[in-house]
Image 1 (spheres, one colour):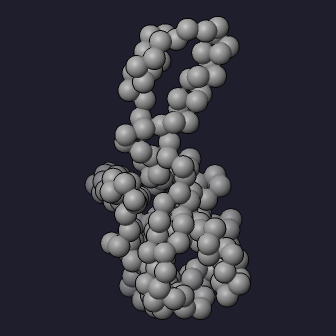
Image 2 (tube, one colour; image 1 turned 60 degrees about the horizontal axis):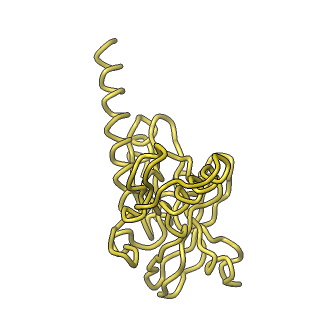
Length: 202
């Protein structure tokens, strides 16, 4: 455990899931996160936590490819329709079109039997990325509805998800949730390159 903790603090990035919360994260950073009681196998809703959509790790998560704007907003076509009203009404239509480029901000998350729910101890240092309304309504979970979180430790970073990430996909089959892990890997690569350059410059 100490070697893994040092790895992160020296600039390493670790993606973890399920029981790693119990076996590693709460042992190394128990003041930040802890494991709760075990959940039963179920499917729950999942949506972006308030304020998390601005986080680079959430880029492309919950965004539908089929819902993207087809044409540039130049006064001609949008989804095959012509602008035909006043500038104020056109502005409203632009806003509606942008909203249409986003899915209803929810997806489905599969929880395996005996996955521990997540208890965030310090919300100033831990950024909750995704939550579940169904978990929040579960009296046994005591309001701990976190599905995914991240925090920085030293020069490195942790990304953790409830249950197993490999079982998650949305109903449309676009695998938009996979962008969360892809963004994390891209950031890990970028930070690693920066650390290498800093080391070479000494």
